[in-house]
Image (cartoon, rainbow, N blue to C red; front, side, top):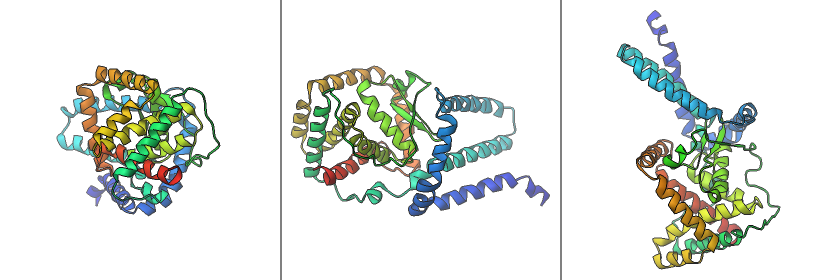
Length: 329
């Protein structure tokens, strides 16, 4: 019994991990008790504690974590292997539990089609054509800089207010291929301000959707888009509709490559310039670091209930297409 006491902490960690995995097995339970329950208060508390800071506290935590890992690996050569493994288990378990309690359970909530009563059937060519044409028309319309407003209510208006912070990693984000990211430990949404300006508004609402408890990339793409539709902000409407058009037109290419090419020719002169600028930007920073980050993040998505990996972004386009077809088309 005395010997067992040495492992009480480890036993508690194992029991908590088992309990967390049991909790995640029921999407309705996660939705009711966590996503629309406890998490709303967690997000508000994190926003109250850290939202006022002009810099990203979460980025400082990431830097500290990198230093800690390097230090631990260095010290492990002087420490018995079992002691090193015990420390790694404790730290890894605590981080895993904190990640899920503070945000990660949202990966296992009720699906977007269930929440918004959207059709989950196979994508048809005619609906892709209709949505591609809709987003193309909207993107061309809002490429005109004059503001256009309306009074629709945001689909996530009951969620915590979002604030955005510039990433402390600066231009490194360009080489790593990210436009923004959400820190689940601090509740902060970071934006890579070095990205082309026309992309930033939609990146912002995408990260805001993560902050509001929509963890999967498909969910964040969808929620970000419908919040953009209801924003009345012409810059955001331009950015969001152009992003969705690009997703939709790529999907249309597998049905009708000629029509997809013709759609690109129909884009306004401003859009063509923005896309040309982005192509130059992407070619400048694309390289082995970007490839590694894509590989790593794909594995992260697979591990967190997103088997489609990076393709889960496309699933958000399908959700938006079916939401728009019911509301606008």
